[in-house]
Image (cartoon, rainbow, N blue to C red):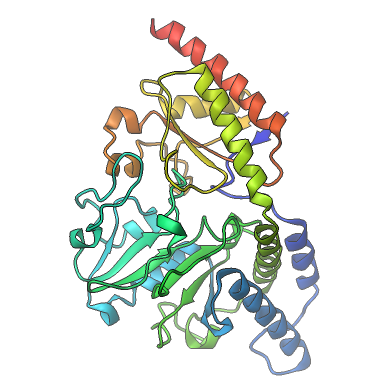
Length: 365
């Protein structure tokens, strides 16, 4: 029996998204066409835009559909000239943002994931990427704050892991841009969104027919967008109903079981506000890559960090930025639960993990 515990990489498709996508397959029209068939397709896109806007707390017109959160990040970064010309990403940012700017900055985090009070001083003025929650550790910004501008900075906020699990909260002010992806909240792969909170439309990086109100050219993926919208609406209901509280309890139960098997294992960010489903488990001297393979053979899907690097497994840049050395950073795994995860799932995982750890210790002795 396989048990899937890698929801931060991608989530199972929600039934609501599947139904919406199947219905969208029957639409013939191009959303840019003015005839009845085109208008029907356009109406579907606009319904989904409203569903996503409701999830993330923005105006409907501020949602720009893209092919992924990675594309949304590139579109946001391309606006840096409007924000002082410079772009920098905190050292813990996802590669889709870090690849565009400086990353090897002085650490602004401690080993629990606390941000230094003067973290902005480490970054040049301009556009800066700041995640609402880290995908590897689950550590969230204080009080779920999605950072706004200040001290000469405009912010691109990655809300990919927060949206659909926690309320998206903007303390005091909104960021300039936010990015998210459908497949992280039960929608299909291959569709994302940029949320543009600025007063001006972004300068497009994909030019052509002027779709998405001249902000992102290319015929809309109406099947994917329909699934995105339906997943966003369903996810919002789950958040409002407190469905993820049970997941947080399972995460804590699992960590207690793992801690009982290993006194040297630490749970990164445990003392900080975290995503309800995420546990970063670090057992120094036991490579994360080895753990992933061993648990895969035991029937459990987990990861050793972000799953967005073409299957590459390497020491976590995130953990190194938090002050862990290379050996420690290479010894971490990420276990991320979902709404369908059961108590039996996490206890069986803990039992299997403990057995593998015991064998590892015996071989190392």
